[in-house]
Amino acid sequence: MADIRSGHCLCGAVAFEVTDPAHELGACHCSMCRRWTGLATLSLGVPADALNILSGREAIRAYPSSDWAERAFCGTCGSPLWYRLTTEGDAAEYYLAAGLLDDLSGMRLEHEIYIDRKPDAYAFAGPTHQMTEAEFLASLPPNPEE
Image (cartoon, rainbow, N blue to C red; front, side, top):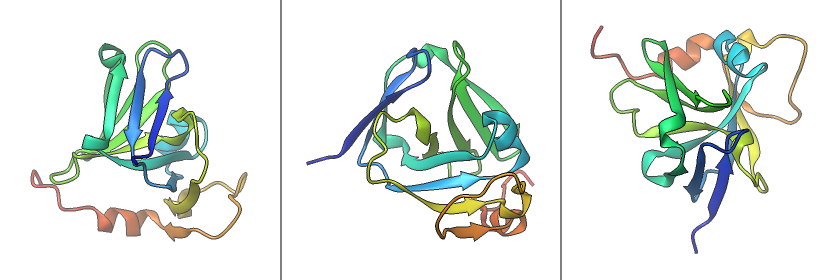
């Protein structure tokens, strides 16, 4: 039986379901994520075919935050929805803001990126796989426009 998790933005305008979500969460400590969410972004990778927007598609706005990624948010309440790489081969995966899910049971923080940009003001408990900014950028596929 499929594991289906529901979620929505703060105002409820955008509602969705995720089928068989990953149980590993990731954290990003880059300055853009911290400004976007107020701290590190916690997300889970969701293939495009596993994300079903139930309502509010018209409320979704996207901001191209870099040459290789965009951030989507609710145009009504401003809740972050997802981060998505726009380089070739990556467009089919969304990094959904974990806090939007109604049920996070069984999920755990597994990895952190931009760990060298994390402020000293906070730390997450437990061991995680960590990548620096340079390591993360090197892991991206080449941009065909470059």
